[in-house]
Length: 134
Image (cartoon, rainbow, N blue to C red; front, side, top):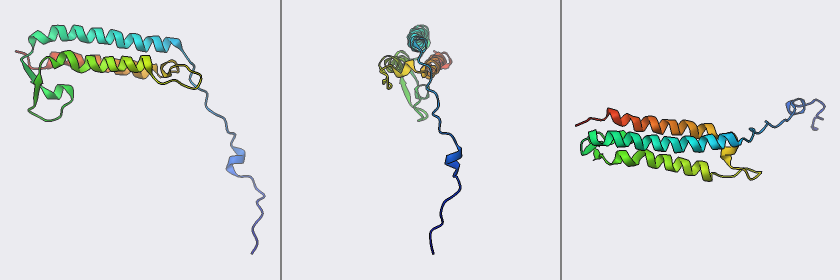
């Protein structure tokens, strides 16, 4: 038996290979993400300032994501849990990896994720108002 000679075109021959355009590099996205994390950090500290005096000495651990029921943590964790997470988020926005042309990842259209996570941390910090009060 002999090999059959390929005469027809394949799917790859008919489908043009085009690369998707890169997201537009924007300094505005970088500034917005850094600003959102800084403002979120300040708001979280203000929330902690007003909530902390109302809390008992120990609060449920589920508030910071610890899933063991019945566990408690000291109430000063209100000052640390989400503000520290916001600081880490700020460091990611400021010192994120660089893309091919030397710009930060946050300047290449990824800023909306930082904005959403910063908002989520503020909402979670505000949930301290729903912890059992004295």
